[in-house]
Length: 555
Image (cartoon, rainbow, N blue to C red):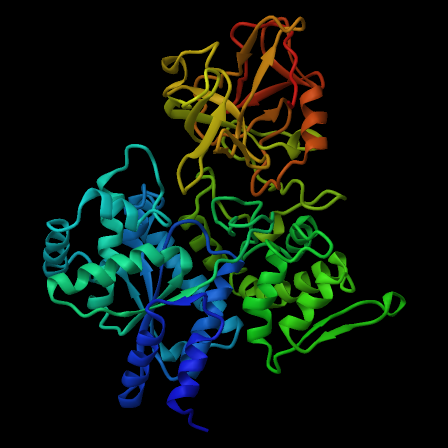
């Protein structure tokens, strides 16, 4: 049965956070659809590995196709490099190939016919003479302020940004013209780029397009505005995570009883599971002794049951984990072949901070996925027994410090960026060593950080990692731990006779951190030990240059 114009527009716009321009944009779409199929595109920069939140745009793409739209999927490889080199140039082709294969696998998983889609790589046309000339035209009329503002929610923000990051929104605006579309679809975080496109494309003679925006899916760790992100392994589920890893991460997910806001599990049911359900319902399986299966005719019914606490967090978690595994099963199967594993390894090589561990390599302890450890050594010279114990529940890494500066209004705090091996770039760190160490003692140096603690704020500045330092037993002096010569940013610490952990290490809670720190000491030679065992990085000893017999505290 053919759909009317209004029915098609309803399908296109349902569940969106915003249609920019509201009624005027909707009327524009109706005019186009009355004459022909609407042409639109969705683009993704090929940086960190896609995760389950990508099912949100995939489910909307299914809506677009049902509405008869001509849909183009853009693999924005050049954008991935321009954004602070989140995808290094030498990995660009390999990473784009992985994106193309895994996103096609996702679409097949939810029953979207690939033959109705067009797939394009940015570098297929963005390096042409005509495109380059248009970029120059836009640079001639775009101020630094406008470029920074346009990319503020998408491009990595640093105090002294590269020109490449400011070009990012200009290229994305031009994509609309060069892909010959009527509309662009993206997350609500793209709004400022969409505003830039609507303002500046007409200035160089191109039409203003319709802009459709999806809501962002909250992180598994919870919190308002805390979105699921490839740069935070604790916040998301990778598409190739094993069934056990998915179940473990979901068990750890934020789901306070009755709390709806910031609940990533509820958001996922709303944006993915209900829209993809054949009959628009969702069933959560439960054992008969616990009351039997729960059937929900709509998301609103599910949310109401959770809000009044008749749906328990554990039941929600079990139901979502089962549904996610059902979505991921065909993707995992497709990527289980040696050929596909070679694609994964080429796109995310071990040691770049975002390698994707194959399912067979994942091991979980009895309490869930506190540690995901691979069976192979992380690097040459790191042979030894498989890592065990509480120590490996803390993601201790070597980090190279950069862009160190003082926090305004404080005489104790520095704010800096630490390269800890993440493909997306450095993470922000706030530290209280200003009274004991000068900036030049930190800048460009390699120290040890805890990389999987819960983000915290100090004087309005978020910190995503913690520098590791010890103090003399009388508390009179303190010192940071220094990485051994030869260690590089991202190298993980490990115990002598063992080897570094690989893969994802889930967020460490306060109890774990306190326990691990309590067993850390420096010995008489100022070298770090844990529970009597030497702590190493890249085969060398981690040390405190100034203090022997130092003790460590988590606070």
